[in-house]
Image 1: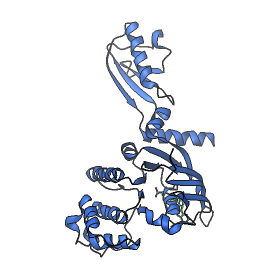
Image 2 (image 1 turned 120 degrees about the horizontal axis):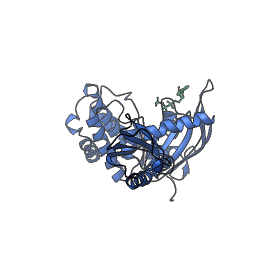
Image 3 (image 1 turned 120 degrees about the vertical axis):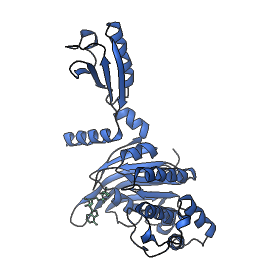
Length: 314
Ligand SMILES: Nc1ncnc2c1ncn2[C@@H]1O[C@H](COP(=O)(O)OP(=O)(O)OP(=O)(O)O)[C@@H](O)[C@H]1O
């Protein structure tokens, strides 16, 4: 692997009062990837972002960005890191274009009207450039936040819940924008509650709970490793019990014996292959079926089962 663009080692944060928001977090972020940090409310996602962006002082551990310790190369790191926070906190009275241009200046970059125009156009904000931010819709305000973060041309961009509370159409639009940023070579770390979002966007997914990273993996590998397959096989004729020919499979009768439910492949990623074996066994036994509905578990289900697993171990 090439050198990580961001590396957290043993990062902990204990807030005054004793709450451990981050507990020995180790993460390496690869250049050019989209990394999704998934976790429930209060898991520590915003604290983690804050630590990298200099808004939260870590209690212990180290943060290296672009190959340098950020505590000793603070300005350089901050200039190359963008943050799209959850909420717009300032400049509500400002026109869009001024707020976005100001963000660029804040990081010491020379004014560049062409670049600002390009950013505003790519976010469909150009027509609104002279509107005050407070008059925009929630989704447009969200785009202004992205424009502000892009104005200083970051190499590493944090998006804290980029699509929370926006409608489905706008969410898809946001995904397209994030895709464009990746195409430009920006490394992106996003936090989200939407499993669909991580599934759609991310190359890798990290799951965080109570300040601890539970698992980090390529999205596909995570699905294969932790996924489970569920299949429903509609039978041509109802059965009263599982015939011996398929007794070795993880199956149960359902819907009054009119269909078979298969649940398996836990942690192996081999569920689909086993379902194929099951159908062959049915055919060999002369049991007719009229349809099969197979699906892999979603990240959301994986997430819930990981948390259950962790609680059982504790
Ligand atoms: N300034 C603070 N002082 C004390 N405790 C804090 C502070 N900021 C956050 N916390 C606590 O630290 C824990 C982690 O919070 P954090 O905001 O990082 O979680 P999160 O995963 O971002 O949650 P959400 O998804 O709700 O934004 C929570 O229990 C929170 O109450």
